[in-house]
Length: 101
Length: 173
Length: 300
Image 1 (tube, chains in turn orange, purple, yellow):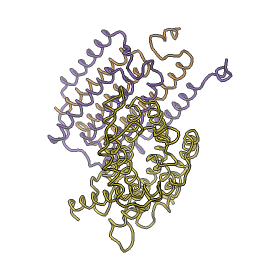
Image 2 (cartoon, chains in turn purple, orange, green):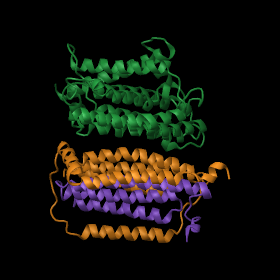
Image 3 (cartoon, chains in turn purple, red, green):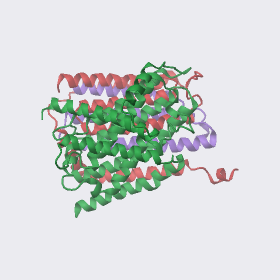
Image 4 (tube, one colour):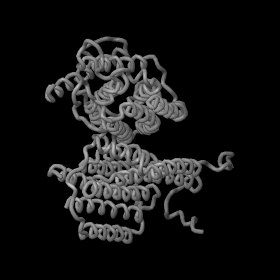
């Protein structure tokens, strides 16, 4: 029962994250949506560790890897955003159609 | 799991959902970034309620810095960072709301209708957890952990080299 | 010692420490030693009218002072004053200090954004850069002490310094932690977010009355917490001859705080670019060297 509760919370967070990624126009806001989705994934992993395999620490290690991925996603995303803003003056996804081949 | 821990778990879960929702519903960008911070800190508190002490505290610590950096980039790149102009920063509303709801509902269904088997009742003490996690990192999963470190290095170099201005920009052309 | 007595003694000593720090700050800034000054000053701030700026962000404006003092107090709660368990004995106490002190940055950033003023916002963003740069040496210096104790519990870290204090064992780490603590508490050589003279009060410029009081007391609590952390992590905690353990921790903490204020009285404010350059170019590599140093010493 507890596991289902946590998984439901994580699923709702994941849904909000998907809305953010699809519905927001700004690159930084899209990254926020991705962060929410990754947070939901971490929540799932910790729930599986706590309620199903408390002796398996690969799960906790996987959470650490996801935290790393969050930080990296932010770093590379901001790098791209900085360059885009410098050359085009905007990081709106609506105005990024010139990236199409 | 004790009743107190369960109540705390549900409470922080609701806090995380509420602030996660606020992220996309406010027009002030600093509020948006700090709502995300509150949501992430609530997820960290849920880790603590699930007795993963190290991960919970690490999550709470890392997100403070990360989301503050988000806040400064938001104010740098947005046209209306204070949210006083009342700009609409969203597009393709119906597909995105629909997509979010459908995916969320699917995942909820998977969570609800799977037979998860027996729940574990006891977890190791925090001391033991830290020790075991360290042993896991430095013995069995060392290769994975090291490659995560290398990935950090690569991403740092990539981010810096992406963000550097072109030569012609420096010369003033 | 029972837990209740421990709590009472800790709270009393901490409060006394904060009061003495207020006296000390007055002495360091104005050169006057007045024992009743904090009471007078705090009462006058309580009675002052709370002026609020126009078009402010009300949520942040109310939250920022409370978050500031809460973050400092939370970090203080895991630090052990005497033998036995601290107020909250966490197995990851050393990480918890970092986690709660990171929220000092969030509070200052909120306080800079909320009042809708230019100087306050510049101060807030400045503190963001300053604290991200200086939290690296803090985290790595704490990591080195954790390596020596082979545990993240703070009582074990103090126990590991039984024979030799960490200040002798890893002097580079102590120096980095000391200077970064000053940067975290924005004491004068690093007081860029408030910067009287260039930013006209900076972050705290738009706060008056009770909120300013909370900020002032919160900063003293922060200095007290950081001095206590320096004592616990590097100066051997409660270890010392003759006197009881509580007294030793208290005296060492006050000495560290006095040295903070003493240095800040005579130091010149650092320019923001050299502040960041020093941290990223020199302090972070030095912290990595410190970890290597401790690792080699542990293997010998």
